[in-house]
Image (cartoon, rainbow, N blue to C red; front, side, top):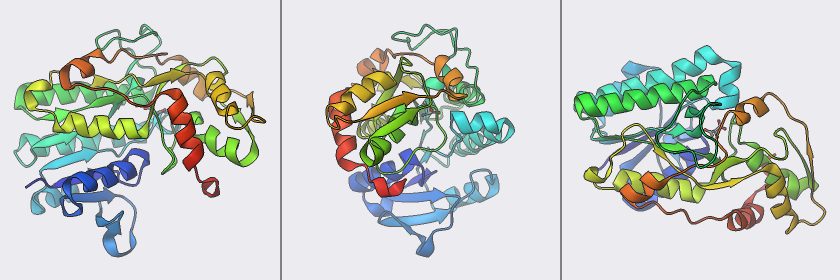
Length: 315
Ligand code: AKB
C-alpha cells in the first residue's frame, strides 16, 4: 500500500500538494509533516506529525516505523532568505536530502520527490529558452544547494537504483498560502496589493523577465511525474519546466485589465541581482517528451484566477 510522507507540508507547495495527494490517494495514505506544533495532530483533513528534517534519527525512525513508501521532501530555504543565512541554508537544503536518499538506498522507500529550481542556472547560462543540458554556474547559495542536490539525486539513482524524481520549478504563483523568501515572490505579492490598495512597489525592475507557473499546473506536474511509469523517467537530476514567462510590467498590464486604476512603481533591492542571474524562459521539451507534460495556465487565466481568489485579510 502507498503511504506518503510529505515533509515541509506547511509551505507554499506543501499545503496544496497535501490537499491534492489526499484527494487522489485518500487521506489515510498521506501524512503531512513539518517542524511546527499542530493542535491535535490534524492538518488539512488528515494526519500531521511534527518532524525536524535535520534530525536524521527522528526522520529515519518515523519512516521505518510507519512503513512509509514515498517521501516528498519540500523543506528548504528559498533564494532570498538563503542569501541572508548561507550556512543554515546549505545545511537545511542538503542534510535532509541525504537522510531521505539513504533511507531509499537501504530499501525503506520506493520513491522520492525532491524539488529543484530554475536557480540551478546562473549568469553564464543562455537566458532564452534555457535548455535542459547547458552551462550551470549558479551564483546563489540556494542555486548551489539545488545543483549539488541534483548531482546527488542522479548519483543515488545511477549507483544505488534509488527512484528519485525532480522538477526545476519556476517561480510559483498561488493564493492558498503565501510564498516565503523567494526572488519570484513579487508575482504573488502584487495581487494582494492590487486588490487591497490598487498599487504595488515591485522589488524587481520593470523588464525583469522570469519563468513562472500557476500552482495548479505545478501540483499536477509533480504528481504526473511521480505517477509516470519508471521507464519514462529518463532524467534523474531534475526536469526543466517552462510555465509562463513575463516581466513585472507585463503582469501589471494584465492586472490593469481587471483593476483599471492599478499603479505599479519600482524600487529594486538585493533580489534584483539574483533575478538577473536566472533565465528569462525555459525549454521543457524533455518533460513534454518523456512524461507528456502540458501546462494549462496562460498569463491571462492565471491573473484572473489570482484576482478572484486572493484573500486580502492575509496581508
Ligand atoms: C525563489 O524565488 O527562490 C523560488 C525559486 C525560483 O526557486 N521561487
